[in-house]
Image (cartoon, rainbow, N blue to C red; front, side, top):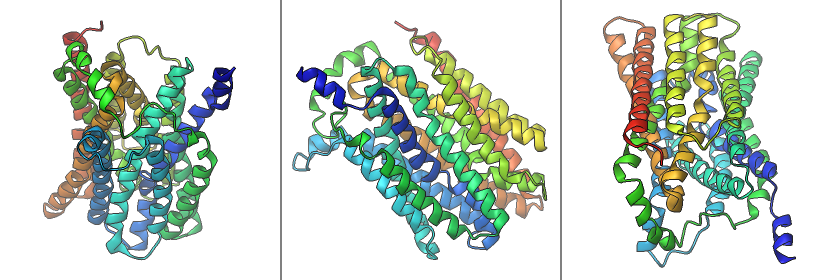
Length: 418
């Protein structure tokens, strides 16, 4: 009777998946990607230029990297600092959601000197929410024999992107300032956080931040079965996806304005990207997670590369629409599959290695915007337009995705499934 009562008190499989989707919508769709649709408004308001925008984006991605590294090394930190109080991963998840709302509201303040710090902190919060939401929800769904619903959880970032993109499009039409947009998104983050707060109230999730010594003690046998070289290759391949998508994800509305000045559809490409993210995540619920996921990961990289090359070769309304959709379709599918692969290779220390992959992904993101800033500066000095710099950046990004696909295919051959 006691066991049944305990099970009944726990959230159901759909409650877990929906809560995970909403948490990721806050952390990713608002905390990270609200910057993209608001960037043209900030440029129009004259509060930033493209070079400053590139560094603001990098500050957010650097924070994302820092947060991911914190998740990666949390067992080591608490093992070597026993006086630190034990903190559960669900507590950090909740703290990250609240921080996202506060930091997003802070961007509405007319204090540009503080914006890099706010974007950095928002990146840290996003990483914490992403890693601990993924770890908690995937484990909870596995307990309920509903692992495939993890794909539904990853519709969250796409939903956040669609909502933020449509809101920003309306704000442009109404002539609102970017500061108003930041304030609206901050309030929305708090509303969504309140909606899922109780679902994450059960701290019996599988990955507490402290007390990981037992998991560490059991990981030796796992290292024998799947060596460090295998996890290193997976980490590197996943990192190429971070660099591969980030130029488009950061500058898509600006690139579209360069190629199609005056078009009435300029603000629709970012929501189309979000629709692709949602569609891909829903399709992933039909995937069999028992096969070799590395082949699917390679396919996802190739689809994204085709999407980028489409917008480069055909900088038209149709080209940008198709390219945005193809870039979005595998966006969170990649994450879902990679996190499942981590759970296969390192089940005892999954959150730490999820943090490691997220950190490498973050490194790829950090490199992208400064590359664009450098190419913009070089193009200006050579008398070329910004379009040349954006085109070259996109070509490099697409090529990097193809390299990542090759790594996954090589891994499937070098480390066959047992």
